[in-house]
Length: 103
Image (tube, rainbow, N blue to C red; front, top):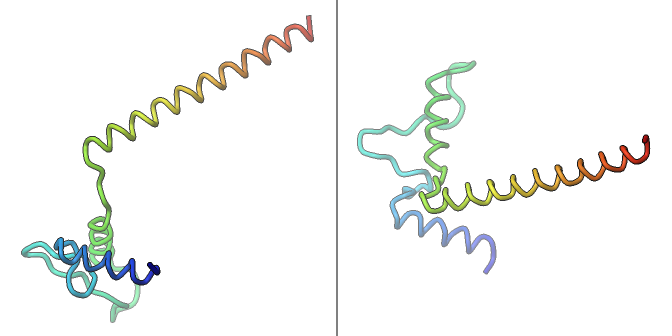
């Protein structure tokens, strides 16, 4: 399966789920309006357009479910504990070596 075929199938799946609209943009909830696309007619920075684009991008973020979050936190905790123990062991060995060397 080529990349373009995979992307098309992924897009169709997201459209069936209601996550994307027909144009491939995130589906809007009731009462929402689509932020402007393309360059603005006025020049410069527009805070409202910036906020609309940030909200649009945040809708694309997939938030982990509770079991995934617990799993990720557990992996991070044990990895951190392992690295701390490794650094402690290396520091202890070097301190013993330097104590013997400069005794």
